[in-house]
Image (cartoon, rainbow, N blue to C red):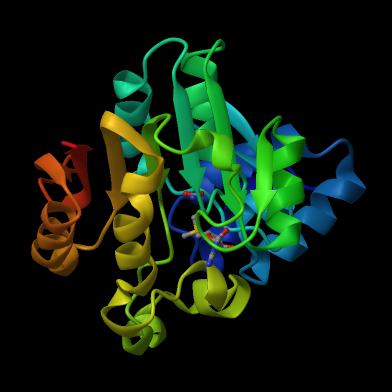
Length: 254
Ligand SMILES: C[S@@+](CC[C@H](N)C(=O)[O-])C[C@H]1O[C@@H](n2cnc3c(N)ncnc32)[C@H](O)[C@@H]1O
């Protein structure tokens, strides 16, 4: 029979940096000893903890994350919280490339009367986001959004794939092994999808509406210029607790 010490030891020996916390989580989620053994065995292969346990906590919300679906990162929490702050109580929010839907969930949870919708190209992720209670349109970026949302959106969020194509091989080994390249690959310079969204944002944003995007530090200057060229003003950089740039936002001025 496995106890907390044995689970922690096994995880630590496999190189888990947060073995204590992961052990608690596995034990909390397992219904019996057999299930705990199976879950531990999967985690020891490097499979993401959220896929093994079935979910992750994001901004205090329980998000279902099915195997194969991008695991929402804690680093995206400040962007989600800012989006929720900027959204009027009965406003309209759109989360592009929603994955499991964590960011949209934060907006909806903060504003139950708001209309929140999401897009996602991967059908497994889209189903997962629906399990999390969201309205999801399947397709490329903003293309599947209903036309009635044109010029109506208060806040658009996007944690899009933004890893430069030629840097994918620098990602941690388990990320490369388990997570879908389509969830990560931002093309040349990492900004191919971001630039498309900045170009089409004004179609959906109402005047004064916000666009918030997660970006890498080396993308800030380029994306700032793109936002300005598309009519977004008050452009600001979102920094994480270490002062590193994590995102960018702007407000449509026309
Ligand atoms: C980096 S993940 C982020 C997911 C989610 N926003 C989050 O923060 O947890 C990017 C997501 O975009 C989806 N995706 C990739 N290309 C897309 C496209 N062209 N249109 C819509 N979704 C796309 C992927 O399937 C993946 O779920």
